[in-house]
Length: 235
Image (cartoon, rainbow, N blue to C red; front, side, top):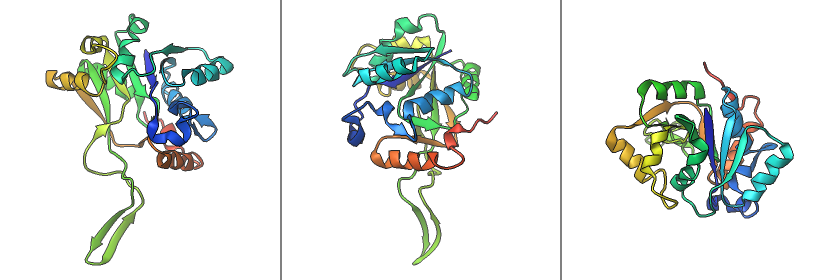
């Protein structure tokens, strides 16, 4: 099964880094976050990738040319193309795939990819997304009167779910994307939900995207720890 990774956005909220390089190439530890994402899939024996390139695509092309990496197909999908449009431009590259995976080039997670695919296959819908708990950006205090009963530094919220990426799609998804200006997260997802064709695989474990410099610093702190949370494999 092939995995598409969206790598073409401008990453403007991380402009400290993305003025020079595309966001997927920002380093977490010694490797770009893109390599960490690829390794999440490889840990579950999914090793065939298509990288949808756009902004500063040469940076990614040069990196993988130097590594001489097999099973990574680099496809330029336009500089200003939206997420849905990037996927649509890959239709011919996925023509032999009944089902494929897709994720963003800026988020890591301990999601069990094997179980995610099994969940998708069991429900037989067009799309499955991984629903995650959004991390709280600031410390959480529980206060009674003026006394602090508990303090948690940036816990995950226990309320609500958000789209964490790590999708599985049936090829019918292409019927819902009309062109370059379509955002995958807008019309296609809204239509799928109304059709009853969108499932949520609930992941309670670690998930973190790298939207800002604060996120990058947080992820770099984690990778220095002995147990990197997105490297966990739970069977």
